Length: 442
Image (cartoon, rainbow, N blue to C red; front, side, top):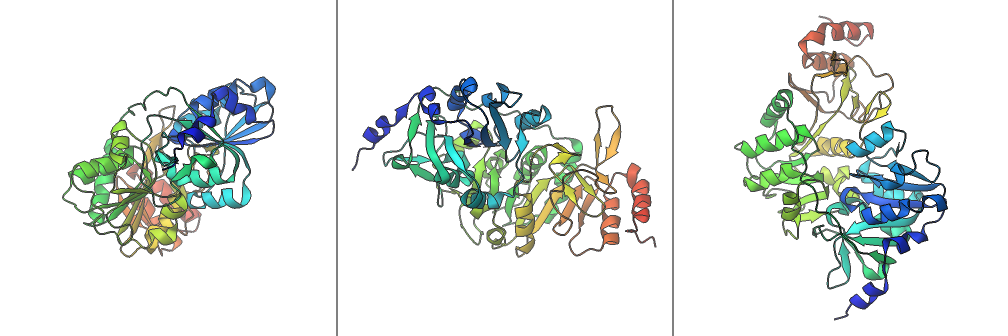
């Protein structure tokens, strides 16, 4: 068998040597979340005075992103993200980051047809004996970025797990231009999401809609955590996983024997994911696990693929809903909060699944910084980014109930949404619906 260590050693560079390949005006990709190249990012930031107009793309990066923080005036580096993490949201608030609108299942096509990548920098686990670097926690987004890159630099992170994949789950040393090694801190234990009484009630409202053998897509945050815990404590069995993002909610289901993937129509017996964000225990469970399969998001999030799975249940959250059934999940006014991600993909996919259901969850109210209570169900949007159009929205859930908007007229939608709004706001919402000529008062 070939010994790939010679090839590997010939490509070893220090971070400072590797980043010399970046030129002014280049597009540089940092890929996704835990694949962020932390050593290379620090080294590139140190070259600030030598460079101008270097554009960097990332996705759900935990930060810090040194190229953004070292140059708040954006004379040397400008940072862009496909989906805001809490850290990247703060960068956007400080005018140090720009959002790239997207739908996740199209990400591969974006890179294949439209996007230039001069340098791709990615953190991956150590090379295996066959000369391959596994894409680990971020198989969903990595392959096409590296394929399109003129230069590929791999930063070896000794803490990343290896996750078995369906395809496009690794890169060979022969396709890598440079390799960087160095110390990485272990992944932190994330803070447990604080689940509010309202979120717990919403989760309880959804449980009757889920049956034995259902396959789940669950988003990220307090709501999915509540769902995961309730499902783990329920009498449901033989649940499946087909999700863009794998979190500790699925580990809870596995640990209680609920997650078997036994009745999936495709990938039977396998829990499918695009990428993963969670605890070290989650990463340990995913590591080389034969029951887990990672795919690019062009597969995981493709509505036609999702629709092949019977009893597919998609559960996501949003910020607000208007009386027409439009959903804003990524902005408050024009302030970017997160991103479109895969919400649209799973809305469509679950809707065409036999027995499928797609839920968008929202607390009926929120409190502003001055302590004033507002309804999360609003008469209409004025500046908020629409994530999911009214034509594709399915179930909406609050702590006051669950309503199905598919096939419903404007007056039926308004009536149903008002019924699950906070009681203190229902009269005002009804009056607004009458003024907007979308309410049939009988």
